[in-house]
Length: 479
Image 1 (tube, one colour):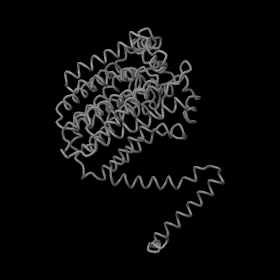
Image 2 (cartoon, one colour):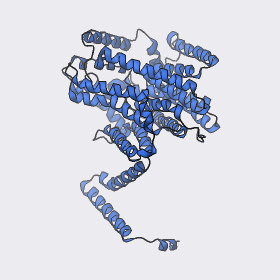
Image 3 (cartoon, one colour):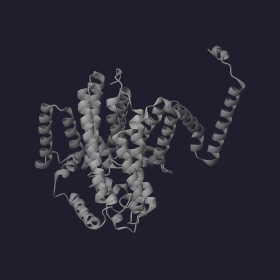
Image 4 (spheres, one colour):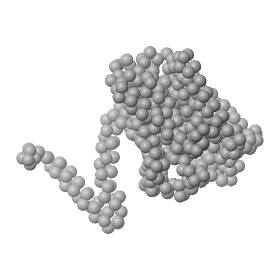
């Protein structure tokens, strides 16, 4: 049995590496025992895994993009279960490494896509966001630095990488399958959170202030490993429609079955999040998907079903015993106290911003407002909406520009998808376009489009749709 080992020949360097590995392993064990910290025991493994990842990334930049997508979806796991550092910086690190890998392999890529309207608009918004550091309202530079990451830097970098790398139909298939599967993992963790209970890290999040917004009336608003229940619920609502579109449009039976099974899972996860904004995400994504089909019969039937769903929530009390349905129903209740509080806050903002057409500056409202701009009036008001947050930070001028940019991009996506000739690709584009619309509209009720994983999903979806007319006509074997 051991005879084949005799044929293995190692050079002197090989023996040196083995000896070095043994020495490092022994030292790690000793250090771990003496310090009573098991983390030191795994340090060599982490170093080796990191080294292997870097080798793979600089051989193939797509490895970096896939790792970034997965990291953005799973970010909450190390952040809550391990803690100790700012894991959000890992996004910048992965994006930077992937960009370096693209630069290293520059002759392989066609950079003409970077001259698209999509990239021009992303760059314009980034420049405006940079100039906001000089906003006369005097917001903190540290708050600006934190806010610009999600507001403008990530969209620019992610869209740029997507434009360069996601240029083939097989990559679209990989992307769609990856984000759906990662969402399945998130949904299953959410179900576990509801039925079994939170993990140690999740419970610590609740104990350290998260319970204020995530335990209402004794009911847990499930958040899985996302930033909060608002992000989780909106994401699950959007993926209900994405999975449904894929299940209806894709031809392979196994894939259709997989996506059909995802639909009720995502629907249940949406309900247990207790997020009202998920209602708008669901309706907007469904309506946009129907619009993109350009099928009058489907549009008519879908509109009737959507109208019936809204009527069921607004004019009946059926299902109120279920907390998830009850919370969803409050989205169409104009008498809801929480909804009216949001309207009251918006009235206060309107009065304050009347004389400030450029807003109060980035990082002046919301979490970064509390941390870095405690003396500012805007820091005392909860935005409860990314639309409202953009309005407060950039003023009516900036908000109007941002809104027009997104609406223009959505309109452009419609034109591109309607002209798509490949039926397999078109189904995926419809699913992604519907996801963008759902995230955008539900951001009126929550901060969704500026946070992970919705941000990376939306910006890569934009890149894919704008790339689709230039995609090669190779046969797609994965569906």
